[in-house]
Length: 420
Image 1 (cartoon, rainbow, N blue to C red):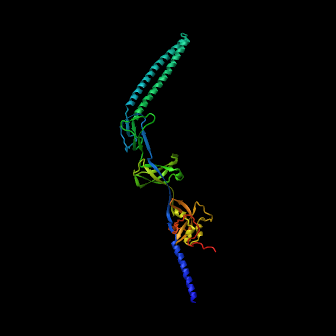
Image 2 (tube, rainbow, N blue to C red):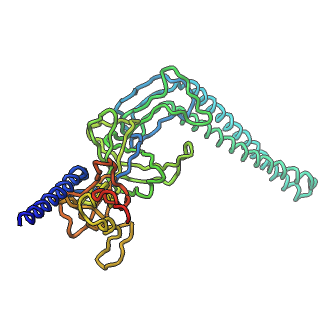
């Protein structure tokens, strides 16, 4: 009897030591798990770009005539009104042109009067010749010569009248040029650029030189941004935009996409397109030419369940599941989640997250929605806000992170016994 009790006690002792050894080994090889939290909030996808600020309405004021700057009445940052004198050119040369044109006009008018007198004399001679020819007192050729003389003077009077018209046009043009020596502002605004100095000579031979640049209203600015061709499909009119400038790094300015221009800009084999963004500037902090870094909100989903993107990429290996004491077949249970119809889900909108609860991993099929690069929207019936989802698991003994399916060996079972 005592021998049976001793045998039973020995068996119990061996069983206890084996169990202690197993649990002790599992404790040493327990995986290190990193988790993320299922949260509820907004998913915002955005496109980043850079651009330069400019005034919405900008007018270049030039000179249509050549001359020397006689006076300057506006400078940088000057507030000007429509019709206000900005500068004056030396009018002496143009005044001389006016006097010359008037003299030519008087000469042309005198020629007309002289030819009209000769025309009247030719008409009188033609009438007398017709009367004498009717009485057969002169030859027929004398009558024809009188008619030719009358017609010749008529043509000369018309030509002289045309010269008078040309002379009048020259006088009018010279007077207009004299008016153009006074440079005035075409709009109400502020001078943002002045390209001339007092005494400088401007030449308006081929094109009008720019003297001033006037912005109509700096309270309304626009941002001209360069959008990469890969992001162009996501940019639409009316999308909200936030941007910052180096002058005010802590201030965030807001605007909207007004236009996406279809003219491509190619620089070093990189294709970009210009997007025009409205930039209200009530405080006048924004200045023309400032460089801005902008973010275009191309998609927004509010009040949705979100998981870290790493949770969707995580998939435990058989070794990790075995370390938790779970069946290795669980590693493939969430590989192809099914929808409500029971059909296999497409890879584009289906995925799996692994909930970490009570030292166990549980696969939860989810429907994937929008993503902002860090968080992704998911839809699942048995996934609640605050749930811990696994993003990384590592075996302490091997130190290897489980990002892909590994071998199916179980580290808790030890080496296989030798075959007999």
